Length: 466
Picture 1 (cartoon, rainbow, N blue to C red):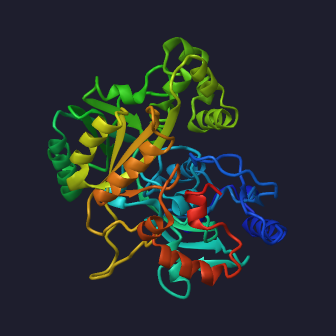
Picture 2: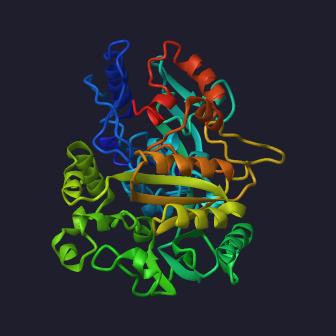
């Protein structure tokens, strides 16, 4: 079977790229360059700009799906929600589907992403076989793992738009079944939990049953769960967590569960993991009144952006005499052997619960003796990690300043050999940042593809919020 074009009337890729390049050329030299997009999964405020954003309105589709080759050609601003809608009818899905519907494929590659298949499939950029990039010079470059533009291919992940914008990506797909059978396994000792992660990562099974997906939740150091998912065609009365039931709470009361594959992929999106509680959506009365179509991560994110802009909740807290709060919204990768130590430290020093646990191991490259590096997010090949996600706020103690908690987390993560994603607040000094995030490589690639330095630098984006 050959390549299948998806909704061809709505995908005119060449015209969309022409429009993008024209809008790029129209931005005056020296003015900041941003994408004009309606949604964003960044969790840091950015400096307001007056120049028009780049027109990416025509780059939101799936160009084609090739079921035989198990690949898809996808435009850079295509959301995973749209991508999954195109691949599931073929019994296929991307190798890693980040947990929020409106994350874009280009965003997951240039800004990283992760999910429960990452213990065997790594990160989303590892399933990219080639990509077209609008560079800072205004040219479109096709980058592959080898060849003339291999340097851009390797440096693009975690560049956050500082090296250009992906207009088209070709990715690998994997076969899936109709349902996902889940086993929710409780652990009262964190070392037992990390031992289980090591076993499943090595054998891809638990108690003799294959494991296709693995993540978990820690409610406290004495109560944590791993969820082992197995693709299957058998699913009697699958659960539905888009209504009154809330997914993360089910881990405490169900040993086994079943979801359709579609609902499994978006199980965290309905309640933004557990963060919908900040808007009252987990209260039974509010939940019945809040339309299901608005129980989505992008809706919650828009509400957060409104709060950043107007600060209504913060003013109410001040009127009540409560201390100001610091936003602590982070995902960090910790080596598996230090994960129990970090989780105990975090529970005592920061105290936010629950936290998400998502095991990760970079994919083994094809071919004996071959290696592949991702210099702007240099996880070690062959090393097992656990992504730990925590999203909320903590009171600012008397005498402390906003950012102190995040700075402390950054220091401990580095001391434990880990790395921190850059989608949210970062406080590194420039020297530390360049050491941790491939500064020398980034500068060399930027100088080649953006000689006039039109695009905002990575440090300026991630730390200075430019």
